[in-house]
Image (cartoon, rainbow, N blue to C red; front, side, top):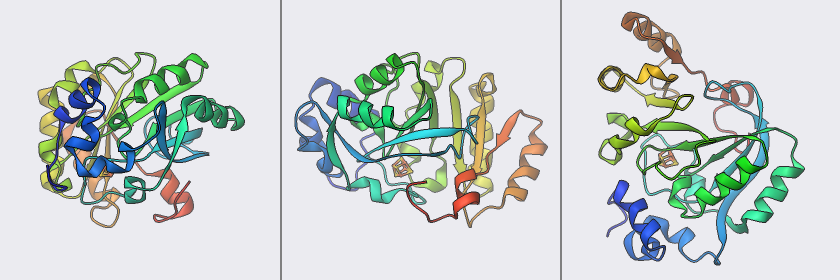
Length: 249
Ligand code: SF4
């Protein structure tokens, strides 16, 4: 498979069946293919203010895992595609313990690329912390621990990854999970509203975010008001506080 092919849902199904499929099936996953047994490749662990979702504003520990099979045009974490070090789940939990927030988010990259992500989420939830998973919406969420709040990042047309969306995930969302759309133009907006209506997604929080530099918050606010739907406009708080290009915040 070439580096430009998107594997979509079949990727995670394949790796759950056969972890070696990572190496065999997708060049983009080579950075995590050679990790020692029992480890995940971790790009960074840090505490900051949660910038997005309905948890925005709260202190949060972020665990950013390396690797993503997608290549969204506007991705703001391309450094997580390759950079990272193998860590055991025990070592990750120890770092989380050393940081104070009771809110923890596992993000990426695409965290569900790691077959061990389910076990990491379970162990984090066992600590009693509130656990969030930010996932691209391309890989099945079926096996994620039900104590974990999923933030499902559906890919709009201008992302270039529309074909990667795994739509059966939408029926698997549980109360409290959130659905996020990052959009750059009116085509993205109309596509997102259609999906929200078609799948009755306002049963849970629906988050609309503008792509920085392409769509203003004001324009998106006006469009949201036209819909009459309870859609939440997201302002990426961490970018407001620290600027759009700062890493590790
Ligand atoms: S899914 Fe997330 S990490 Fe992967 S390319 Fe898209 S924005 Fe970047």
